[in-house]
Structure formats: C-alpha cells, structure tokens
Figure (cartoon, rainbow, N blue to C red):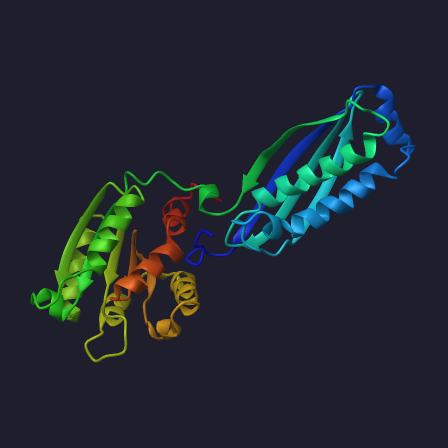
Length: 302
C-alpha cells in the first residue's frame, strides 16, 4: 500500500456513475412499477452499493481502510437506461474515488442480476468517475512564480563550519518545488542581532516569505522566536499549531518547539525547528496551503 502517513486529514468527496442499458422499454417500465420478479431492483442495488462502499478496502488490495462519513445512491431513468450516481464523503488522508466507483459498479451488477431473467440483452456501460474534491490537488492556490522567499539557517555549528546544513538546503529545494521563483539562502549564528539583521535585510528588499530553521527549542542558545517576535505585526497562531499537531502524531517531542509565525508588515515569517526531519514534517503540514495567505491578505479571496 502507498504510504499516506505524511498526509493530513481533509474533506474528500467523489462522485461516480454507471449505466444499465436495457434492450426493451418494458424492462425499465417493470423497474418503475416494481414488477421485476426478483424484487425491488433499486432498493436492493442501493443497499448493496452501501455495503460495497464500506468494504472497498477488503476487495481492492491497495485501497486504505477509511471512515465513510456520507454516501448517497441516486437513479435516473429514461426509455432504455438506468443511470446510477454514487457520492461518497470522508474526512481522511486519502480520497474516496475508488469507493464511489466500487459502489456504482456493485449497484450496476445487482441491477443486471435482477433484470437478466426478463431482459437477456441487458448490459452495464460507462462506469466512471465524474468528480473528485479534496486534498492538495483541489486547493485553489495563487500563482507562486512571482513570490520571493529567503531561507535562513540559525545555527552556531553550521555558521562556524563545524556541521553541514541539511535543513536549510532541503527547505530551499522544497520551496522551489512549490514554484517560488526567487529564493535566497543565508546562514547565521544563534544570535538575536544576527537574526534580526536578516529580517531588516529582507523587509527592505520587500520579500514575501522569510523562513528560519533552527533555534526554536529550549536550550539557552535557542533564541529565534525571541529575535523574531518584536517584528511580528500580525501573528497567525494557527500556522504553528497545525505544524506542531502534525508533528505530535509522529514525534512526541514536537510539543517542545516554540516556533511562531506571522506577518511583519507585508512579509510572512515562519520559524521552523532545526532538525531536518522536523522541517520535512512542517513543510508537509503547511505547504502549499500556507501560500494562500498572500492572496487573502491582498483581498483577492473572500
């Protein structure tokens, strides 16, 4: 199975459809009038589709078990067709496309089975996904190419050449993958004036995003939050709450990070831990959704 441990819970929706094609209008009439010998075709199919949706991971090996929070099966009929529509919702880490298609296909099979004694040429057609929503692929995010960003590594050992930086280089590459056009990279010691000098520098350059890594822990030299806080004009507490909650599910010491986030006038500042593993977790928790703040701040999204 595909690893989804890094993903976050979001509302996911999917709608799938299938069509039953009859060879005679009398077949559809029998369904409408409840005169099919095997029983109520549509209600049997509805119950079977609901069971199929819930049991998808039992019969499709690579599907993850997930909570089904809503499911609906609807029908439309014309002269020769029964159109089945199945909608499924969940709040989980992966989508419900296969669940919706599984429900539609089983509903179609049940209808086929119940109609074949009265219509030898009935057939199933067009099982397909109509819509899917949720997850990162559905985020309505702004174009990032015009954004400017800087990554600042706060570390005594890295600034002295005693240790190789991994977190800052990963961050730089990760921001490139988000489509950000211009990214600067600097290393400073764990020193309040040195950190604040970087804030002044990139504010004067009118950069959009400044990301610090390191100095958010509990040692005497971890001073990044203290250096940054006086410059925050509008704090965004939910950003780091989200990141710490995400990390807490994976590493219990995530609760010890003191990172803060917010705008310094028009520049967004994030303060991430120095551990490369923590930085990876924080990026997965916050991006690309965090970049939406720029369009919100400009009043482009309401």
